[in-house]
Image (cartoon, rainbow, N blue to C red):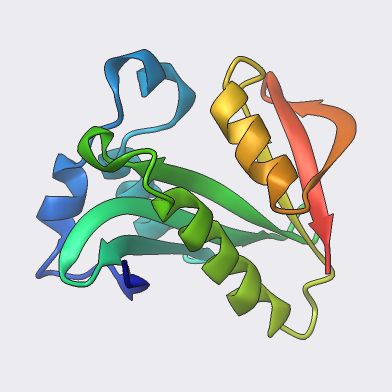
Length: 145
């Protein structure tokens, strides 16, 4: 497995839109189409495709939030046919590495539906800590750099 993050562009955006989470996860994450539109109109968002070699397997998007002056992972999804293979973990680890190199990034924040136990387990296992805060009915965790 050689996981790399690549820019979403005119050559791969449609493939990205075609990725889907499992049916029981659909309420946990916005569609990739919505996320790409959001990134187009909110230029602080950085949308990236998750690849295993040349196979697109997922999507991740991070952003600087000027309201709280933190960097956030806004989206993470792995296509239903590629889940439970470590792609989400590898993508988050790479975003953490990218943001560790950003001078003003002191912590990374993520929110997720409290019912998404897989997300909770993933983020906590990657060093994110519970904050006790909620935003948009989602639990907030953060990782200090």
